[in-house]
Image (cartoon, rainbow, N blue to C red; front, top):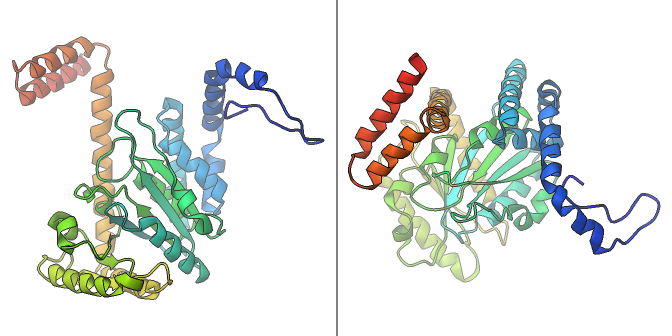
Length: 375
């Protein structure tokens, strides 16, 4: 009933229903959705936090749903949940921080195929893997397909893996609004590796680089000029470039592409003092190259931990995330303030008509908001 449909069978015997009961439920769907919202909000954050830290995948899924929700009650409960989870996780000093890795690449490069193969390879070596896959949302309807689980059938059935698909909902940078918080929950749940599969839109992949420890760029061979499809801005973000599909007729092209990326990366200014971007070849079809990728990942984290750069990067990310939330909260308060609605619409109209510069209108709105709160 939660999804707005009736059950087709009971516990004693199968029972086929006609279409009438299903159609009669249509008008009840808003009520059912409201009931689901109340059930989610009524979950005790303290109990849910303990279950997440204990490693329960069902609790983790429920927790991510809570922090992703924009319902006012959910947002308040989500903040409390996150605070409790972070406190419990911090008390468990024996747990190592997870390896947070962002994975990007042009559409068709094989991100999902690589993640399933590499994730299954890690699970065979007793690593617990969480995959946060961000799907693009329609600019017209806001909908998303969320089909990553269907493309990772083997990994989705693995008890050592957790896969979560999330719509981008128009957020730039190839990630979702609460990806940072979802990563924190996954780490607290005991997952040693957290992979963030981005939308893969090219130049706007900067956001994921600012919230993960390592940024991995996937590239495919045989596309002509290998450096043409992936611009310098994205290349500068990469800590590891993995050339996929290095098998069969594309094996030679993959080796050539790797050599070209090695040359290109040498011209880039390194992000860290102790690490220069590396390259690797992978064949998901033949399950080759995963050991090399894993070795490069461990080399990267070992180098950054030794110098303290990894800890400093995470502190900087937390500070940046705080200010991002401050900006979002201020915009939401300005646009929803009852005394400012007419004032904001008036200045929007002036900007659109070319009568007022956007910077001047923005300053006036901020000043009016400050005046409204100083009374």
